[in-house]
Length: 454
Image 1 (cartoon, rainbow, N blue to C red):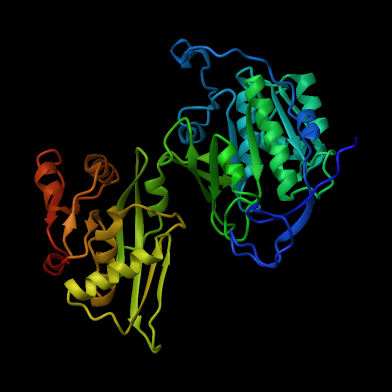
Image 2 (cartoon, helix red, strand yellow; image 1 turned 45 degrees about the horizontal axis):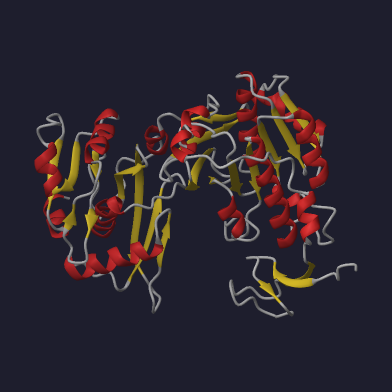
């Protein structure tokens, strides 16, 4: 007896499924995002799983990680974010705004992989061969080990993988791929889930690494069901704006390394250029004599980065003054403003407060608290802070300044670029004063002490 076709209703934003249509998704809260889709049959799934090998269970102690050395791209910024290179059989999901340079970065990486002897299959569902060849010519990509095909059919892509047997697959983008076994539109939740599952199963079975390019929503998240991020091994975001030349590659998930590492690139006519000294890049245009400008020492993974924090405090004509933050958590700014007002004695309840991390980079750690407070005080009082000074330390609700990890590498980076003075938690000042005799390290116990020094 022929199986009856089943239909489901799925949210196109988060993938939540329903037995009937609803106007608003109860999971993500989006309106008019639930559409009808044909449910994938088990037979369809079996046809699109690719050529997976049948393996026998074996003791994990007998499986050596050294049997599968990482693929090195010779792009240290990319390799560092991946945890030391690309792991064979791993699937990397790369997201980013349109035009940020995802395809450019992957084409340069493919060139380096090809030069090291790896066969790369580049599948594009958005560009023709001539368009990709034009970009490759501009970037100086000349290796013959990059195989290109413009294809959107899942079955055809799996066939190309079977015939070419690549070691690395680049799929740009996963939202354009569709299976002929499903009647829903490409990019729908059902298509995205089934096609991604088939490609991932093929990668695992053939021990083939893959980069999947993903579109992002207006909120900045990767489009499609959240389950897609759970299925892959690594989730990377390529951040940047069209008004700035540099890009930041950040890891949100990594089964094979740290999620705190970042890679910094600069977009140029020859493609992505790696930035090995991001501190100098972010501070290159810093004004020297403007109140509210402060250098803070942050750490991303194992890399110290010095950035400029800019604060502007001005009288507000509004009943509810503005609190605006760019590059730092908005709630963190509101918290520090409240601490500065309550514990520091500054009247900010009728002041608009604007805070910006210069250069467009985003900082997520609390070690920037002391620098933010110093920038706010500087802007409020109109006093300029010594341009050769760096700040770092966490501020508690009582106004106390607490110690932060990796103080030595922060001070070492500050000393390397020529800074002479540092405001740090008292505990760190006592520990590091002898180690850095050429720097004037000033210990701060409470934010009130900043009034005496600034």
